[in-house]
Image 1 (cartoon, helix red, strand yellow):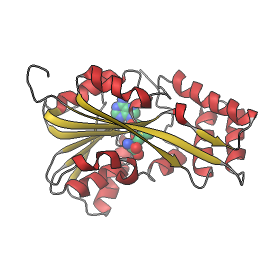
Image 2 (cartoon, rainbow, N blue to C red; image 1 turned 120 degrees about the vertical axis):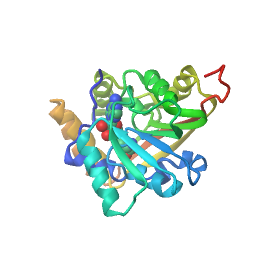
Image 3 (cartoon, protein in one colour; image 1 turned 180 degrees about the horizontal axis):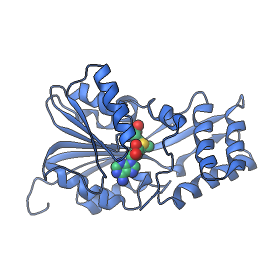
Image 4 (cartoon, rainbow, N blue to C red; image 1 turned 30 degrees about the vertical axis):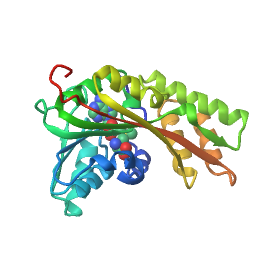
Length: 254
Ligand SMILES: C[S@@+](CC[C@H](N)C(=O)[O-])C[C@H]1O[C@@H](n2cnc3c(N)ncnc32)[C@H](O)[C@@H]1O
Protein backbone atom coordinates (compact mmCIF):
# COMPACT_ATOMS: atom_id res chain seq x y z
CA UNK A 1 0.00 0.00 0.00
CA UNK A 2 1.06 3.57 -0.63
CA UNK A 3 1.11 6.43 1.91
CA UNK A 4 -0.85 9.56 0.98
CA UNK A 5 1.92 12.21 1.03
CA UNK A 6 -0.02 15.48 1.61
CA UNK A 7 -1.85 14.13 4.68
CA UNK A 8 -4.73 16.06 6.27
CA UNK A 9 -3.15 18.93 8.21
CA UNK A 10 -5.20 22.17 8.37
CA UNK A 11 -2.78 23.59 5.79
CA UNK A 12 -3.30 20.64 3.41
CA UNK A 13 -7.06 21.04 3.81
CA UNK A 14 -6.86 24.77 3.10
CA UNK A 15 -4.73 24.01 0.06
CA UNK A 16 -7.26 21.51 -1.41
CA UNK A 17 -10.37 23.67 -0.91
CA UNK A 18 -9.00 26.23 -3.38
CA UNK A 19 -9.66 23.81 -6.24
CA UNK A 20 -12.67 24.25 -8.53
CA UNK A 21 -14.09 22.46 -11.57
CA UNK A 22 -12.88 25.44 -13.61
CA UNK A 23 -9.89 25.54 -13.97
CA UNK A 24 -8.92 22.20 -12.38
CA UNK A 25 -11.45 20.03 -14.21
CA UNK A 26 -12.13 22.28 -17.21
CA UNK A 27 -10.72 19.58 -19.51
CA UNK A 28 -13.80 17.44 -18.67
CA UNK A 29 -16.52 20.13 -18.89
CA UNK A 30 -17.75 19.12 -22.35
CA UNK A 31 -18.57 15.62 -21.01
CA UNK A 32 -20.58 16.86 -18.02
CA UNK A 33 -24.07 17.14 -19.49
CA UNK A 34 -27.19 17.91 -17.40
CA UNK A 35 -28.88 14.76 -16.11
CA UNK A 36 -25.91 12.36 -16.13
CA UNK A 37 -24.65 10.35 -13.12
CA UNK A 38 -21.02 11.06 -12.19
CA UNK A 39 -18.47 9.54 -9.80
CA UNK A 40 -15.59 11.69 -8.47
CA UNK A 41 -12.79 9.43 -7.13
CA UNK A 42 -10.49 10.82 -4.41
CA UNK A 43 -12.83 13.78 -4.00
CA UNK A 44 -11.15 15.14 -0.83
CA UNK A 45 -13.04 18.16 0.56
CA UNK A 46 -15.37 18.05 -2.45
CA UNK A 47 -15.06 21.55 -3.92
CA UNK A 48 -14.75 20.12 -7.43
CA UNK A 49 -17.43 17.48 -6.71
CA UNK A 50 -19.95 20.16 -5.73
CA UNK A 51 -19.16 22.13 -8.88
CA UNK A 52 -19.77 18.96 -10.92
CA UNK A 53 -23.14 18.55 -9.15
CA UNK A 54 -24.15 22.07 -10.22
CA UNK A 55 -22.97 21.34 -13.76
CA UNK A 56 -24.93 18.07 -14.25
CA UNK A 57 -28.03 18.97 -12.21
CA UNK A 58 -30.61 17.35 -12.10
CA UNK A 59 -28.14 14.46 -12.56
CA UNK A 60 -26.47 13.03 -9.46
CA UNK A 61 -22.87 13.01 -8.31
CA UNK A 62 -21.10 10.73 -5.87
CA UNK A 63 -17.78 11.73 -4.34
CA UNK A 64 -15.66 8.81 -3.07
CA UNK A 65 -12.63 9.07 -0.79
CA UNK A 66 -11.03 6.84 1.83
CA UNK A 67 -10.75 9.63 4.40
CA UNK A 68 -13.88 10.02 6.54
CA UNK A 69 -12.96 13.53 7.77
CA UNK A 70 -12.72 14.85 4.21
CA UNK A 71 -16.12 13.36 3.46
CA UNK A 72 -17.67 14.90 6.58
CA UNK A 73 -16.34 18.30 5.52
CA UNK A 74 -17.57 17.80 1.95
CA UNK A 75 -21.06 16.74 3.15
CA UNK A 76 -21.35 19.66 5.60
CA UNK A 77 -20.45 22.18 2.91
CA UNK A 78 -22.86 20.65 0.37
CA UNK A 79 -25.68 20.96 2.93
CA UNK A 80 -24.69 24.53 3.78
CA UNK A 81 -24.78 25.43 0.09
CA UNK A 82 -28.12 23.63 -0.46
CA UNK A 83 -26.67 21.26 -3.09
CA UNK A 84 -28.99 18.24 -2.94
CA UNK A 85 -27.78 16.18 -5.92
CA UNK A 86 -24.45 15.15 -4.36
CA UNK A 87 -23.53 12.39 -1.89
CA UNK A 88 -20.19 11.34 -0.44
CA UNK A 89 -19.13 7.72 0.20
CA UNK A 90 -16.15 6.30 2.05
CA UNK A 91 -14.31 3.97 -0.32
CA UNK A 92 -10.95 2.93 -1.67
CA UNK A 93 -10.55 3.59 -5.37
CA UNK A 94 -9.23 0.02 -5.65
CA UNK A 95 -12.53 -1.40 -4.38
CA UNK A 96 -15.46 0.87 -5.20
CA UNK A 97 -18.79 -0.04 -3.52
CA UNK A 98 -20.80 0.35 -6.71
CA UNK A 99 -22.28 -2.13 -9.17
CA UNK A 100 -20.77 -2.59 -12.63
CA UNK A 101 -21.90 -0.03 -15.22
CA UNK A 102 -23.32 2.45 -12.65
CA UNK A 103 -22.07 5.84 -13.86
CA UNK A 104 -22.21 7.84 -17.09
CA UNK A 105 -18.89 9.52 -16.29
CA UNK A 106 -15.99 9.02 -13.85
CA UNK A 107 -13.70 11.87 -12.87
CA UNK A 108 -10.57 11.93 -10.72
CA UNK A 109 -8.37 14.92 -9.93
CA UNK A 110 -5.03 14.71 -8.11
CA UNK A 111 -5.37 11.08 -7.01
CA UNK A 112 -3.49 8.77 -9.40
CA UNK A 113 -0.09 10.38 -8.66
CA UNK A 114 -0.39 9.11 -5.07
CA UNK A 115 -1.13 5.49 -6.00
CA UNK A 116 1.22 2.54 -6.30
CA UNK A 117 -1.16 0.83 -8.72
CA UNK A 118 -2.76 3.46 -10.97
CA UNK A 119 -3.73 0.90 -13.63
CA UNK A 120 -5.56 -1.20 -11.04
CA UNK A 121 -7.45 1.96 -10.00
CA UNK A 122 -8.26 2.79 -13.64
CA UNK A 123 -9.60 -0.73 -14.22
CA UNK A 124 -11.84 -0.40 -11.14
CA UNK A 125 -13.09 3.01 -12.36
CA UNK A 126 -13.83 1.39 -15.72
CA UNK A 127 -15.82 -1.39 -14.06
CA UNK A 128 -18.32 1.06 -12.54
CA UNK A 129 -18.56 3.13 -15.74
CA UNK A 130 -21.35 2.37 -18.23
CA UNK A 131 -20.27 1.12 -21.67
CA UNK A 132 -19.67 4.19 -23.81
CA UNK A 133 -19.16 6.32 -20.66
CA UNK A 134 -16.30 8.82 -20.31
CA UNK A 135 -13.42 8.95 -17.83
CA UNK A 136 -11.38 12.10 -17.08
CA UNK A 137 -8.27 11.98 -14.90
CA UNK A 138 -5.78 14.71 -14.08
CA UNK A 139 -2.49 14.79 -12.15
CA UNK A 140 0.57 17.01 -11.92
CA UNK A 141 3.79 16.03 -13.67
CA UNK A 142 6.91 17.27 -11.88
CA UNK A 143 8.87 16.93 -15.12
CA UNK A 144 7.23 20.16 -16.32
CA UNK A 145 8.05 22.51 -13.46
CA UNK A 146 9.26 26.10 -13.72
CA UNK A 147 10.65 27.27 -10.41
CA UNK A 148 12.03 30.73 -9.76
CA UNK A 149 14.36 32.12 -8.70
CA UNK A 150 16.68 29.17 -9.38
CA UNK A 151 19.09 28.20 -6.61
CA UNK A 152 21.10 25.17 -5.55
CA UNK A 153 19.22 25.03 -2.24
CA UNK A 154 15.80 25.13 -3.92
CA UNK A 155 16.84 22.43 -6.36
CA UNK A 156 17.85 20.17 -3.45
CA UNK A 157 14.49 20.74 -1.71
CA UNK A 158 12.69 20.09 -5.01
CA UNK A 159 14.56 16.78 -5.49
CA UNK A 160 13.86 15.86 -1.86
CA UNK A 161 10.11 16.41 -2.28
CA UNK A 162 10.07 14.24 -5.39
CA UNK A 163 11.96 11.51 -3.50
CA UNK A 164 9.51 11.76 -0.59
CA UNK A 165 6.40 11.29 -2.74
CA UNK A 166 8.05 8.45 -4.68
CA UNK A 167 9.13 6.77 -1.43
CA UNK A 168 5.51 6.91 -0.29
CA UNK A 169 4.52 4.87 -3.33
CA UNK A 170 3.38 7.75 -5.54
CA UNK A 171 4.86 8.99 -8.81
CA UNK A 172 5.62 12.68 -9.37
CA UNK A 173 5.95 11.96 -13.10
CA UNK A 174 2.48 10.40 -13.29
CA UNK A 175 1.03 13.07 -15.61
CA UNK A 176 2.62 12.09 -18.88
CA UNK A 177 1.93 8.40 -18.19
CA UNK A 178 -1.86 8.83 -17.87
CA UNK A 179 -2.42 7.86 -21.50
CA UNK A 180 -0.46 4.63 -20.95
CA UNK A 181 -2.48 3.80 -17.84
CA UNK A 182 -5.88 4.39 -19.45
CA UNK A 183 -4.81 2.52 -22.57
CA UNK A 184 -3.67 -0.52 -20.56
CA UNK A 185 -6.91 -0.34 -18.54
CA UNK A 186 -8.86 -0.69 -21.80
CA UNK A 187 -10.15 2.82 -22.51
CA UNK A 188 -10.33 4.13 -26.07
CA UNK A 189 -10.45 7.54 -27.82
CA UNK A 190 -7.79 8.93 -25.45
CA UNK A 191 -7.09 12.67 -25.43
CA UNK A 192 -4.20 14.11 -23.38
CA UNK A 193 -3.83 17.80 -22.54
CA UNK A 194 -1.69 19.93 -20.23
CA UNK A 195 -1.89 23.31 -18.55
CA UNK A 196 0.19 25.32 -16.10
CA UNK A 197 -0.96 26.53 -12.69
CA UNK A 198 0.75 29.41 -10.91
CA UNK A 199 0.42 29.59 -7.14
CA UNK A 200 -0.25 33.00 -5.59
CA UNK A 201 0.78 33.86 -2.99
CA UNK A 202 3.82 31.58 -3.07
CA UNK A 203 3.37 30.75 0.62
CA UNK A 204 0.32 28.60 -0.28
CA UNK A 205 2.56 26.06 -1.99
CA UNK A 206 5.81 26.75 -0.07
CA UNK A 207 4.19 26.17 3.32
CA UNK A 208 2.22 23.17 2.02
CA UNK A 209 5.40 21.42 0.83
CA UNK A 210 7.16 22.43 4.06
CA UNK A 211 4.51 20.71 6.20
CA UNK A 212 4.90 17.51 4.13
CA UNK A 213 8.67 17.54 4.82
CA UNK A 214 8.14 18.30 8.52
CA UNK A 215 5.74 15.36 8.83
CA UNK A 216 8.41 13.19 7.14
CA UNK A 217 11.08 14.36 9.63
CA UNK A 218 12.94 16.57 7.14
CA UNK A 219 13.00 20.07 8.77
CA UNK A 220 15.89 21.32 6.61
CA UNK A 221 13.96 21.06 3.35
CA UNK A 222 10.88 22.46 5.11
CA UNK A 223 12.87 25.55 6.08
CA UNK A 224 14.02 26.00 2.48
CA UNK A 225 10.45 25.91 1.13
CA UNK A 226 9.17 28.28 3.83
CA UNK A 227 11.92 30.83 3.18
CA UNK A 228 11.52 30.53 -0.60
CA UNK A 229 7.75 31.10 -0.32
CA UNK A 230 8.48 34.49 1.25
CA UNK A 231 10.80 35.71 -1.46
CA UNK A 232 9.56 38.69 -3.47
CA UNK A 233 10.59 37.27 -6.86
CA UNK A 234 9.47 33.64 -6.89
CA UNK A 235 7.32 31.56 -9.21
CA UNK A 236 5.92 28.04 -8.91
CA UNK A 237 4.49 26.97 -12.26
CA UNK A 238 3.14 23.45 -12.09
CA UNK A 239 2.29 21.32 -15.10
CA UNK A 240 -1.05 19.50 -14.84
CA UNK A 241 -1.76 16.71 -17.33
CA UNK A 242 -5.24 15.40 -18.06
CA UNK A 243 -6.42 12.40 -20.02
CA UNK A 244 -9.94 11.59 -21.12
CA UNK A 245 -11.10 8.29 -22.57
CA UNK A 246 -14.15 6.17 -23.29
CA UNK A 247 -15.14 2.75 -22.05
CA UNK A 248 -15.80 0.73 -25.20
CA UNK A 249 -19.50 0.31 -25.96
CA UNK A 250 -18.68 -2.88 -27.83
CA UNK A 251 -19.07 -5.80 -25.39
CA UNK A 252 -16.24 -7.74 -27.06
CA UNK A 253 -13.71 -5.00 -26.17
CA UNK A 254 -14.88 -4.45 -22.60
C1 LIG B 1 -4.73 15.53 -3.42
S1 LIG B 1 -6.31 15.13 -2.78
C2 LIG B 1 -7.35 15.65 -4.11
C3 LIG B 1 -8.73 16.01 -3.66
C4 LIG B 1 -9.61 16.56 -4.80
N1 LIG B 1 -9.83 15.59 -5.85
C5 LIG B 1 -8.98 17.80 -5.35
O1 LIG B 1 -8.33 17.74 -6.40
O2 LIG B 1 -9.12 18.85 -4.70
C6 LIG B 1 -6.35 13.34 -2.98
C7 LIG B 1 -7.50 12.66 -2.21
O3 LIG B 1 -7.47 11.28 -2.57
C8 LIG B 1 -7.74 10.50 -1.41
N2 LIG B 1 -7.14 9.19 -1.61
C9 LIG B 1 -5.83 8.86 -1.65
N3 LIG B 1 -5.68 7.55 -1.91
C10 LIG B 1 -6.93 7.03 -2.05
C11 LIG B 1 -7.44 5.73 -2.32
N4 LIG B 1 -6.62 4.69 -2.51
N5 LIG B 1 -8.79 5.56 -2.39
C12 LIG B 1 -9.62 6.62 -2.21
N6 LIG B 1 -9.20 7.87 -1.94
C13 LIG B 1 -7.86 8.07 -1.87
C14 LIG B 1 -7.13 11.29 -0.26
O4 LIG B 1 -7.78 10.97 0.95
C15 LIG B 1 -7.38 12.73 -0.70
O5 LIG B 1 -8.56 13.25 -0.16
